Every structure is written in structure tokens, then in C-alpha cells.
Length: 261
Picture 1 (cartoon, rainbow, N blue to C red):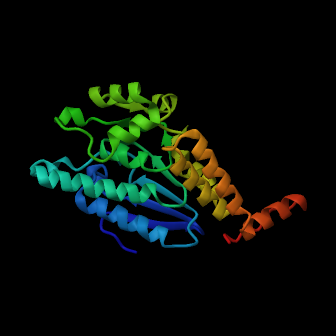
Picture 2: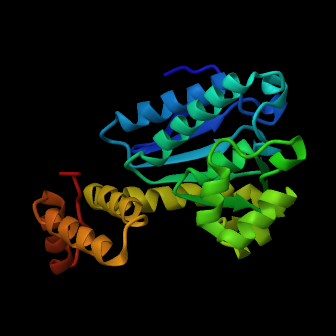
Picture 3: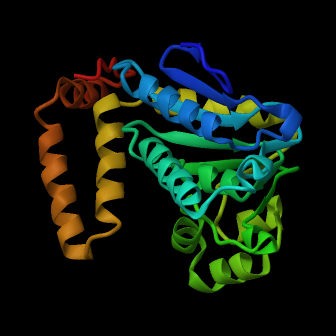
């Protein structure tokens, strides 16, 4: 599919790469770009062969430097609210994608960009990555979920420090506070991401999808009921061909041949 502000590629079977493609403005998010992101994510979700989605920004300066301030500076309160709700819906579409999603942060990842990255399941950062929620510098609050996702990722105290000071965080500190999973030399970021994507794609597709679903649903439940949910889904996997193949392959000491059924 063709989009105006993003590029959707499939570098290998089952692995999709979504690139925010506005490098002249450091991939800033305007209304059209956010709509493109949502439609591209839906296209991936409609492919039963999809296994992993990688998300990055064009160029080597920014993942996404934030929302397009020039485009929204003169919004009315209703327009600003509509923009926020539209972006929240788009980012939730990404969050709800049943396959793992990984943000590859290759530079500035600020404001709406940080909110977009946090909507992925986890973040791989280059050693040149810079994160932040600088909305207070503009006299506004985060509008795309930043105050809530950041709090859940790094804890209330650290989140409030970053949200109220607008302080930027380099890659090593982002790793230390739990915002990113790994820091990788910039030249190796895509290679390492593809290695991780291939590893995920080699696993049982049904079990990967159900594992993500259980983790997402369970995080907002009490521990007992979340564990009950896990047990129910564990039992459900025994109705699949992948379970039979996976365990048979283990006993026979050979690689499994998963079909996603």
C-alpha cells in the first residue's frame, strides 16, 4: 500500500517495517502522518502471515522529534482535542496489534515521538537516541498518552520528573530507568532489530500472539485473576497444531515446523 508520509515495507516473510518518512521536519507528526500510521498498522494486522512489526523514522537524526508544532499552533480547543483523540486512537491501534511491535529509535524521540515509541511493545535505542516529553516548554500537556504510558513504564516519580521539567534523556539513562530494552550502536540498530524479529518469527505464531494478549490484559488486573487468565489461555494452546508440533519436535530433538494453526 502507498501512503503519503510513511513507508510500509516487508523486508522478509512475516516481518514488516514501518518508517515515518518526513525527514526534512525530523519526522514530526501532523494529522495526515498519524492517519497514515493507523492505516499502515491496520494493513499489517490484516495479513495473517504477519509476525513482527518494526517501527522507525527516516534518516539518522530522528525517530520522531514530536508533533508538528507549526501545523497545530493555531488550533482551536476543539481542534486540539480532536487531534489528541485521533492520535490516541491510532496509537491504540498500534498497541492492540496482536503481533509484537518494536520501536527502533535512531535519534530524537520527543513529545509525540516518545508517545509513539511507548505505544510499541518495547524500544530498541541507538546510542544516539534522545528521549523526552517537553510539552511543558510549550505551555501544554502531553496529548498522545505520554503522561500515562511513561508513568507505567518508569514509575510515578521518574515520570513526573521528566514530564514537569521537560528534561531530555539520552540512551544510557533511558536504559537505566527502564524506558528502553537495549542500547545499540547506531550503525547496528537495524541489523540487531532484524535478528530479534527473526527470532520472534521463528516461534509458534499462536503462542506469541496469545502471550502478548495475556500480558496486555493481565497488567490491569489483580495478580490472582491475571494468573487465572494465563491458565485458561495456556489450556487453549493445547487445541492448536502448533502445540502438538512444538512438543513433538522437542521430544524428537529437531526444530519445530510451526504453521500458525
